[in-house]
Image 1 (cartoon, rainbow, N blue to C red):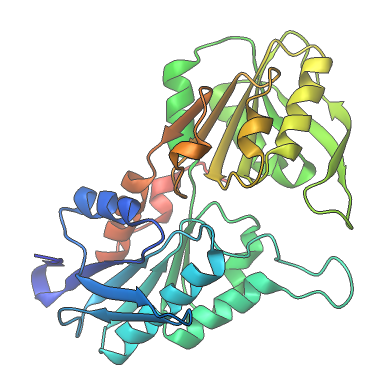
Image 2: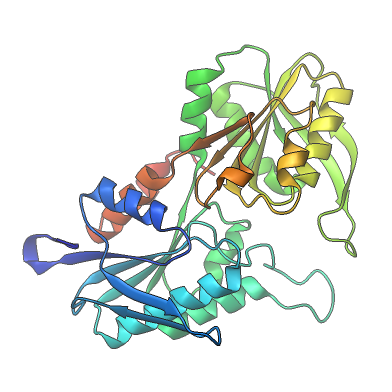
Length: 325
């Protein structure tokens, strides 16, 4: 069956967009369900179409889409799927967007700029979404952009479990790559029992993805540094951070990140000698062309499946992240 029926005739259905069907299949396997058969296609002029091949009336629907390149196409496809569910009388519709699209445009830094993350939330609401589920939002304030429940999941338990099993060093130092990630890095520091260091950097407002590292607050000399961040795009910023740490005497540098966007020359930047290891989750597809020897990819599907189960059963998503930031 492509739906899970529980007591009281509750019915859970999982629907996948075309951006990253492998992740949706893994989530379905964790839940012991199947994905709803869907006829999704792109017409010659670029318009998108979606229709579900079985009834979704009265169901609790979860629409899973990973917003990778081309992000606008996959965002539109998810909106169309939500609209189709609404018009097919689904009881509740949850948008599952492991990587929230346009999350970096969460505020106005200069005049005449959009707040695109808010626009995306408005689009989901207008399409008919009742709830949003996402992993490691770039800014927690995005939760307030949506007029409805937002389940903000954290990949920290997945990443921490990996490091506790594999590193086992007494010379660790947790590093925040900028002031915006200090709170998260501080929790990492507590969980690993390691000191905290902070990189002070300044971003050029006129040149995207260009950062100058200015100083390091904290002692990293002879330490194995774990740099924690929410996403890696081109890898230029995080590579400069790793280089600065090595110049300040760090013994080794491991990058821990949730969303592996890996645009442009990311694999080249992350393969440089001053980076020893990169650990990410698979919230976004990481094709063979984006893989390299130092990369470790951890599965996010079990976390998503557990959260979906809690929402469906009216349980507590918060209880999954005791002590998470």
